[in-house]
Image (cartoon, one colour):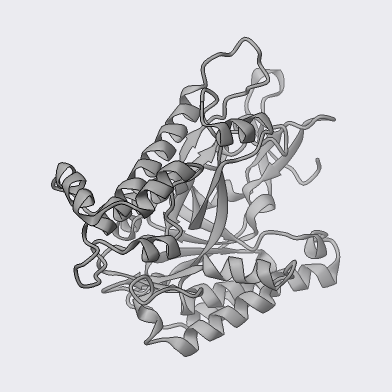
Length: 390
């Protein structure tokens, strides 16, 4: 089994694979992304994860948001997604429930007919982790008075994150008169990093007027063997970035997401990993940007022209949370790629891309995307059948 990252997702303009022009456009886009991955690395793109208040909250602002069914905060995860399967499973159809009638879809239908495969044990060296699946509590059920465990865990992680936001400001105040450093950033720097105390204006007001001497006394009570609070806040964001709901409400399909066996590479700063951010970040957050300004501009152009954007604001928000993982201290990302899966019609072009790329070791093998198939259980007897008809 390998960790496969599939691409590109089919969009409306290329959804009809029976249309020759649309199919060519789709395949050319897939080949372009393959070249990009082998030359630059894996692009980790943003995905929003909404956080909702604990339904027992007494905070008036959160209570109002809860009654309106609105989120009270949002995590934006910069991540690359993988599925742990054999190559043939990329074409395996599974049943999706819908309101009208059941239908079938394969991983390749949802995420793309191209894929790169990575050894799951080698992937540990740069921090790929299994997604943490949870289920949302259904508040429509009037008999339910306690949130489901999955929702409770997410809520508690969010609450711990808020506590570390408070502590990070106390640390900043306690070290207010020391030379600027990244161990205990000032409140101004924390605000730039979007670390804030959500929906607690009273606490924010007290933090803004907190005497540095008093902050120092409080800090000593928390001066345990740990990293600084803003770092812990960041790690809570990373942990929450690994969460995914088990069910698809869009498809009315319980366990639809769980069937993807998803793993994620979430952007994180660890010694020995090479990241390049495409947004406007302070040097401490994106240290390689100074060395590679032309490459960043080239990558930004690729993102800008690679799809249609709602407006410039949408594009800039996307770029701000885009990070390219180019490899580890000793290896380029392409040297972790062990297998490449492509549609049969472009296997020649894909092989040429591999032949024109320099690898440190054996190049990846190339595999043709199998025909779609599924397991039929007619009369209780399992039978593998080919299927392209819904």
